[in-house]
Length: 156
Image (tube, rainbow, N blue to C red; front, side):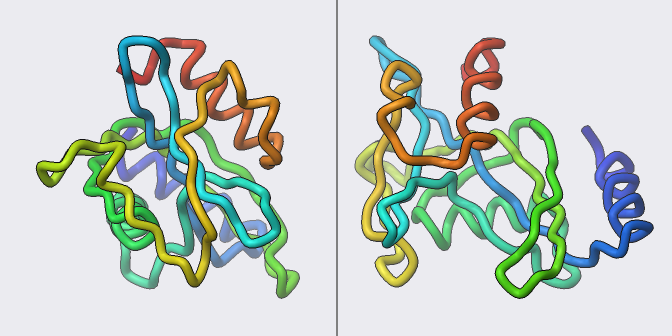
């Protein structure tokens, strides 16, 4: 999906009074035995996909790459737009959130060992397999996004 699609989604958001955007990232890891994705553990013990605000003047793809680096230390490239949602922020503003599948690449240490989280925002991380996703406290939409991306074999 190109910039024109994102521009259309942003224009639709503006028509609804939505002026803030964020990104969420599905970061997969394929092993011989399973397909896992990275989830960060918040201080309240709930897990979430990495992500955050889109800065002024930043494209969605630039925000995705920056957030992956800031929150996980991983270098990624955007692979696929998955979906969007509108949600209420803590301050009451509505935010349009864009979900992307990204492909990590290693700085030489291997993907699973390269994760370096910011301890001011998260207390840990897990590579979660769909087989055990039900065991984790996580937003139901984020779980559905992961399941649908994996169900259609789009992680390889």
